Image 1 (spheres, rainbow, N blue to C red):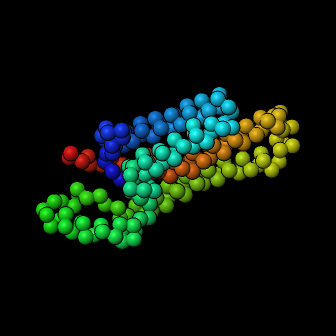
Image 2 (spheres, rainbow, N blue to C red):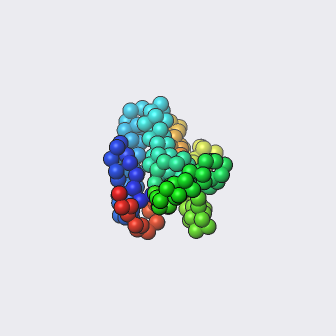
Length: 191
């Protein structure tokens, strides 16, 4: 995990767990506000994709990381020889020049990191499995849902659409959030 990253040209320190907690809470609050705004615009019909899911993709890939080389987390499961063939040559040249290995981005994951990532994905997707089952239950048995919950078919479809958006946001962001939330304080970079 990186101790800091740059967002809009500004360095943000994330070495302390409290800073990461604030970032995660802020991001989910912004996503909830965007989802509320999208509801009032057109009940998530057209704006749900652009107003809610597009920012969730940006957060997941570029702020949290784990998929590409940007963000707070290292890419998941990257094999350096295949993804970055010149990395080892550049690393050896960098070390021969007298620089320390700390200045290089380290993408290789060890067994502890792999276990943490697997556990975070397990916890995240176990929770989301319940959401998906709830969504499928409402979809498969709509007459019971409509009669017992006193919902119209349009309200039921709105509920299903909202559950879909929430589940998609959580699929994109929850594993990384769990990793960032549970990682202990780390040493800050000396830049």
